[in-house]
Length: 298
Length: 267
Image (cartoon, rainbow over all chains, first blue to last red; front, side):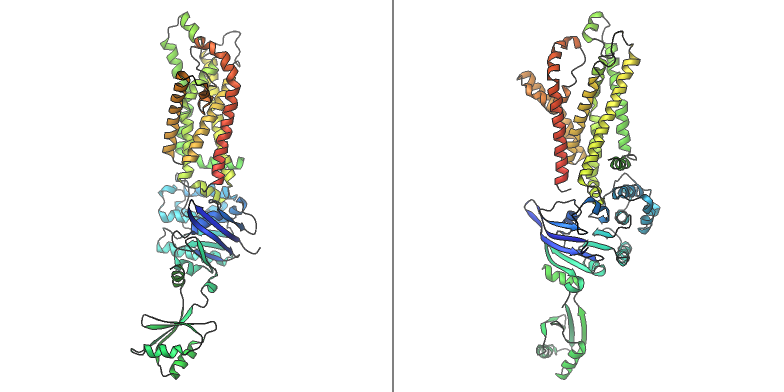
């Protein structure tokens, strides 16, 4: 099996509005795959299509290398948009229904309730839960039967900082167990912290997809600083350095972007010193997903 | 299908509104019949002339027609149950969650249709028991009278119940909101009656007999004053197969529209 989920040229129209345009990417087994995009970029629409609650206008998708069916969805734990439960039933009874639909026994319910710390409120009706508790019940439902694939759409919505940290840790732990996780979020640091693969959507178009390292490749830069008044001299010196892609000034420092296989910090330092420029700041910086995202989506 | 029905049962068995509406159905079917029986008994002089016109509507064999007709006045109650259970799924977005968790769209719509069928069967059994109650307990069985004569009305009641519940289901699936669905269901019941009344009586348009609710209403004629309406019976017998066929076609149409809508559209 080459990929867990293969999305092929999916387009979706809501009347005249094009929500997705020929989106294609593959989710490899064992990946923590972030689907990233601002509000309204088409993340939830895309996940809705692969979970069969929305119909694609064009294109196709495959789960586990096969044509999608309800049997596949039973093997996937999914939290899409908001937690959807019967308001008049308790948390536990709602999970019993979910387990029955998934074709799994009820034996796993105490474990998942414990995992999301809802065991002591399992008998309370769903409509008495706080937003965070509802979200945790939805995550518990996803975990029923220990599925090998999980789909989370904004899983930390409504959670307090402790809850957010717990969910992130849970995602990391699940990833370590070899599970494939597809995570849609508009929270960039959330994706950056837990994902190893990413697809970036904007206005329904796929801007980029791949390994986080690949998406951010060549995005390392060196930040240099000199005493006041030396900035022009430094710029002139660095301009003579071979393999420079871009040089820009940012908040009193010069940022030096290099071509592939660029030079090391020590070489830059030695070169500047030999040219009579003494640096007071020299640091290798990685471009954050946030700045990459802002650059792509501006 | 049994496993799907078990899951539907899990959804409703702890739902208070379900039990309340079911209890009202159980009480109201014999209740309205007793009320009308009591009204008949006390309101009309027991003269021989009155007896000739009215007949014995609560005795075998006419009791089949009387009870089924009376009970058909109460379709709004099980229809409320259908609307509530269906629109709940949309309100809570659990129709999406059921599909996400692993039901196919066909399974979702299939089990809902099965639920409606079971509710129609349940109402029919209640009516059957009420017929038996009035026929055997309320009245002494006259000699040379067959208990099962006219029992076909219980089948007509079933068709009528199924039809009304399917209209309620269709509205719920299309409108998705409980209040609006109930409102339109009630308004439609009234509006159709008015249209039928005007077009048939004033303009002599017989085609209105085949409107969605009227066609099933035609299956069970007005049961009182049978002697006065006896002249209409041969025509009714003649048209009965067409009423049944059109009612069946409507049922198939309701299934087709709801099924296609749920299977093809975004949830």
